[in-house]
Length: 456
Ligand SMILES: *Cc1c(COP(=O)(O)O)cnc(C)c1O
Ligand SMILES: [Zn+2]
Image (cartoon, rainbow, N blue to C red; front, side):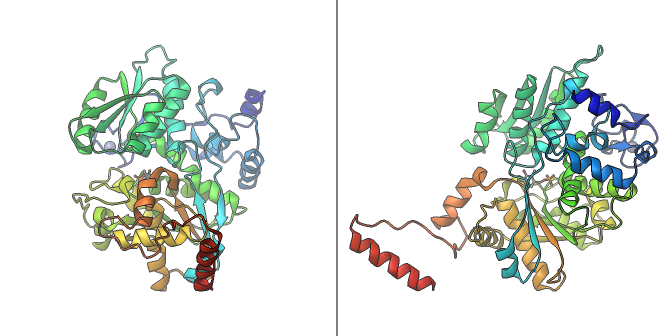
């Protein structure tokens, strides 16, 4: 049923392949075990030949994507696979590993926007996804390609692996478990919380807690994956970008194919902002949109190498030793997708800005008071938004989207610590701890009256 719908919607002779992001000649199959350019060691990118995609005009593409957005016709109900011709066109149906990721809500944050003086603030809730972060968008693609590789006669791959302390390992473990492919997760022993450990543990991954830090884990996973029987799923793998790029396309679709003025996104390894840009680039090239949004990369001050590079006009790639930050998913000192992200900022007249621990915690807490439940990374983006509005860069009527990268429920330690006023170095101005009272009606009435009159 779905296969008929699929083959009739695919333009003929569609070509998609790895090529060197730095421009070396030569194409490579996306089903080869390859993470970097064999000539110059740069990152690869998945490239889609434009000519066959032009067989369908811009309006027809919009209509096609619109028509699939709410369907139960598997796998088109996934925000990623609803755009499969733009993602991995030759992936066979039986190899699509999807749990209906994407198509996350984009909602108008009316009250919060008004507090900033903005008439149109929108929040794209990427954390409302299968494992609670946008990482699902990339992992559905990577694991699907691996599943197809494993059907090929010459296939060496037997398992997938990544080093991570958080959202990447959760997404990899879940998608690998769904596909029945073994997953190996490398974590620094004693440096991850129970919450960060528990998703891969529950999904049956081989969780290896090593006697080292994150960088030590990264080094070992790269060495272990040299022999090609274990496929590396860290974000230098550009297959993940193909899934993540759908978020920008999805935002435009949700605005009836209008382009917002600004998109603010919290960044660490710089894969996600590269992906966002790649989606917009493809829409521009195929005529679905006629301008770019301005992209804002938001960093935590304690892990801000991209901000430091931006300040020098990107004359140098800066690396820092990333300090401890509440926004632990973006605690990265030497971002792997630097070159791609520089292009994303330069081609969109973008900006890089940063936020302190106090600023991100305060921004997150204030947003929660308008009905959200924001993760600390979303707090970084909201703090940066406030700075740009106050500086007059973002204007009151600019349509502005903040990408919320994870669900706040994955970061309950941060929330509890904030409201108990126990976060080190943070003043919890909006702390709202419960009040403990005697079970006595008059005591309760007095407390309610005191509180309601105080807030009036
Ligand atoms: C991975 C992640 C980021 C950063 O994305 P990069 O691609 O590394 O820049 C931001 N927020 C959350 C919640 C993440 O899991
Ligand atoms: Zn190269």
